Image (cartoon, rainbow, N blue to C red):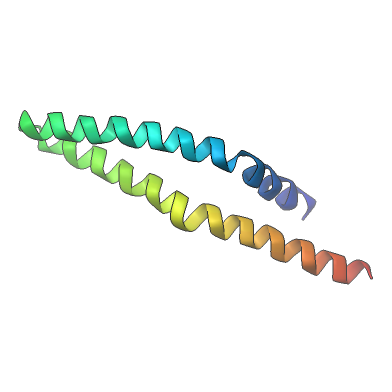
Length: 82
């Protein structure tokens, strides 16, 4: 359980940097999707858009859920120690 807490604390600490990196990646993927669409390389455009969706899912769902689980575990573990 301590491993999970360590990972969620690390995620919280590094989240702003990770989100900045995601923004840069998404910007590049948007450019890739645009060029691929203009060059009629639709599989590449689709792939880029799927990666953008994946990054946004991490940002909007997975990262917040992971942090929430860590906070919940901290509360539960502190109650068990009492």
